[in-house]
Image (cartoon, rainbow, N blue to C red; front, side, top):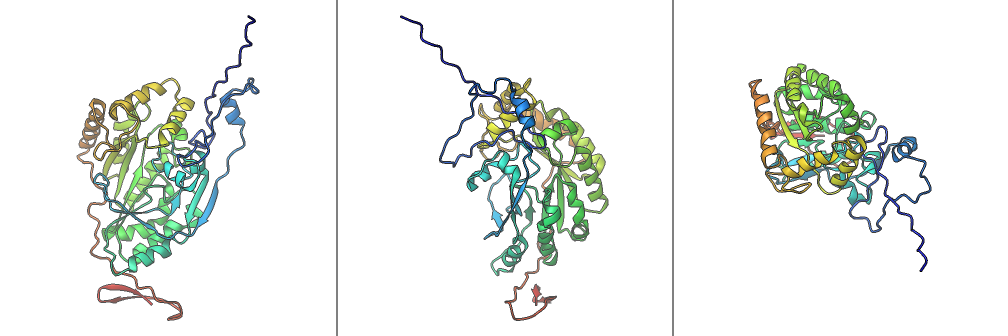
Length: 388
């Protein structure tokens, strides 16, 4: 019997890194109806995967204007220090590979990978919706977390000024707000934040994941450099605005060795408090992060994932309250001890950045129907803020 002709073996190539982008692929979202799979058909044997990615056309960012129907999100999670949040944007051009908000692009029929950082939805009516929400008689004021899912100061904000509009409404109504960002653009709004902070109405946090600029360029490719973020902490602190440092995420063998140095640098720059979160890999973030590891740290990729799984009960991720932010086991406990000792060296403690914000000053806006008046001004009426 004649030997059968051997069939070629197609090997799926490893995705290569793209300059200026965090994700290395447009990984399929979990709600898509058709499945797709990359494989090498042998036609491009002369091309290495990394070279092909480097030569690929640069992806342009698209900003899509969206008229939102609601603007405030509420949660009752016991391990999150706020109950109400506002996000002017869906998707984020910063391209942080670890972003826990990436899976939300699946709800739009888009990829949590490259689509998440190149197809940004801007809620152009954010300030108007917020004013309507605050005017409701049933509204009960509590600190609003601004930009916790996707950065409220990502590059598109420079022209769109949606976050600025939201802050103007909050300032008018004396409503407390907490912001978290990794962008120096937050300095633009010091003229709003400083007077609010003086009245215990504003607090900020700057995310600082690593002090290594080379790692930051691949981990958070379009965010401000670590040194620039330290300068932002100094600037905010000098303006009298409380600023904490968010060391998130802590990635074993990648950013984790920097832990004590980040705490020291942030406090030296003027941060008043600190907190940390161990890497979270929900849904599509896990395969995207694995691709990123293979593209940038192939020598330690398996070691990193082994350590993550040790802190997550043998899985890539455990969503249980209490464990999802810090992990569990010996390594999680070691990170906690290192963080607490580093903070204690400065006589500080990790604390809720919303602690101390004052909701008692809130004055409700009154929305006047069109045609009632051609202009509006602020006036006190029964302790409320009226707009005529």
